[in-house]
Length: 220
Image (cartoon, rainbow, N blue to C red; front, side, top):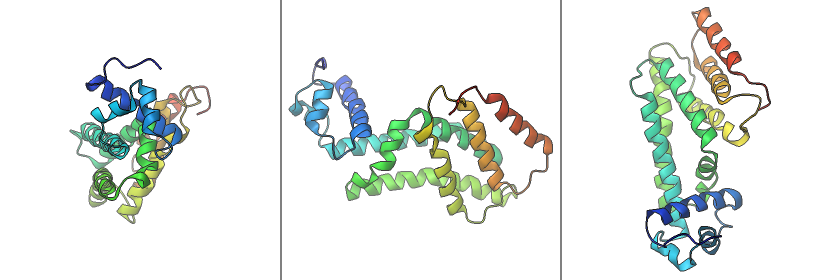
């Protein structure tokens, strides 16, 4: 691979991070070596230490930045929304879309938790907890207002997140369903699972029609 211009500066660091994401995604954290990473970027192995302290430092920063970005974008998606149903729809749309477009980062953040050292692991788990709490609060507010019926908020939170994260493992561009159709399908699944009652038949029909109109012509 051609040598990266210069061995210092933000461009080289960004190249290291991008290569790190790809190599960890394809080979796993344990299998990726710093020599392999340096070769991928096009610099000497020793030059890596101008940008990262250790391989563990790289993994931690990748996962931490991913979850911080997730939190920032979620808060932006929820901004200005007060109704629990509207907020849950926004949460579903954001989470599914993000995880379809950031598949590698999502995979690493989930599968390589085991590779984090204890202190780093605790930091990441706390950040994940903050994200989970956003959804848990939406469900709690919906139960309080009588629009959601949830037996256990924590169980529902984990179940919904598992459902919504699924597309990052199977979604392929150009498949039978568009991104919009996949979001609509997950929205319907989640809302039908937590809503206390659908008093407006027209709303249910509108949601179903929106899903059908978003369907394209190929398999997911």
